[in-house]
Image (cartoon, rainbow, N blue to C red; front, top):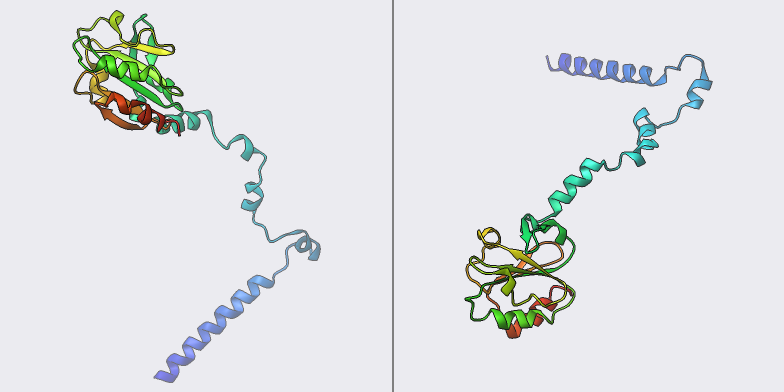
Length: 196
């Protein structure tokens, strides 16, 4: 019985080998010239070098999706400036920023504002807290400061700010590196770390 099985297995193996050999040796119609013109590349290889590849590398829609994915949640806000214009947090993308929350009742805000007035290389946002008059902004005279209103507390909530005088530091990738109170004496060093 074992001899019969071994013989059957050998016969099947030989049949498969002859079939495969016969498939590989068949000439294309048109003789040997047709086989000389053919290369080892598949039709898919020809498509990989299509001139359309350059045009289709990224579509505008993919660019927008990539930008949206890159923008952090910290920059996903809209606010109103004291002059009534709309300010988009997305405009800060690629630039480090400091967001300073102040109110008239804040004991440390004047010192923090004075320390922030001397920093360079960052976008400065000064946010008037609830019940504060934006005209009393301690940073009103600082060049380049964007003054924002937050009468409803939406920005404070967005950044998780719990008290007037809190400072939010945002790096150039849109990530929050600090949120909360900051010793005015440490402001220059903390802000400088955003630009390194």
